[in-house]
Image (cartoon, rainbow, N blue to C red; front, side, top):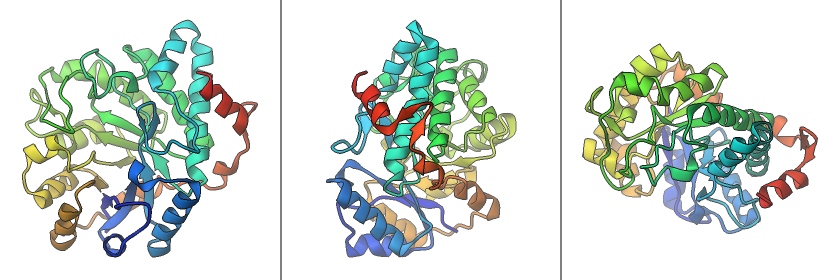
Length: 336
């Protein structure tokens, strides 16, 4: 059963990319800036991917601010902190902007048959994490819940599901998990009464996707959250009653590698812990090792969860949202 999300090398598929996509273990593909030259090229690339495997999930990190893979030809989405600052002066308008932002992201990506963006960021900005920072809506829980919920509703209106990240909360620690191991020593009670309240609220609102962090919460478990049954089964599935799809963060990140050296063991541990789809990016050699050595059967329930992440192409064709045309929405973004 398809459980891996991989990447490709450039603007077009090479023969190695094509062979990897054909492998039954591959069910998703994530796009990066290196895969985008212009709109015509992107349309052709996604079309060629789907010509090999029609039902593959195609995703991208397109949060806005410093994490927006496609630039020229796409609207520049503001970082979420800008919306959070508007909230401090005018909560109603900020929620309208958040909804419009979600709809615009969905409309622009959906035009190219991309299923979803890994957004929104649900982390609290505690002031210590540069890798989160202005990607977070706010330093307080209530505005994050409101604004992330509004963004998710906008995405949904544009036919796109949300992926909230990084469970159970990445904003407290300074370390960047792309580059090093990260340790959060707070108690479970502290995390549950703060960071997890945001995830709980979005789950109640019907969010369909969640991405766990690679942070180790040492008072709770010795493994990073994305490789931990405690976090994915006991807390996310059982306590918070999340029924949607769990996407790992990139298993090639340093924090994941340091927790489990062997890539096949690392990915297997994430799947056993409860991930429905595991991301392996920027490491074609590791992908090839997995495709040759990983044995996994996800089951029907996991398949259905992943299917729920597909782009709704009918909803994606909506031409306006809350009285704003696509051009008006783009203008609002550009003037923020």
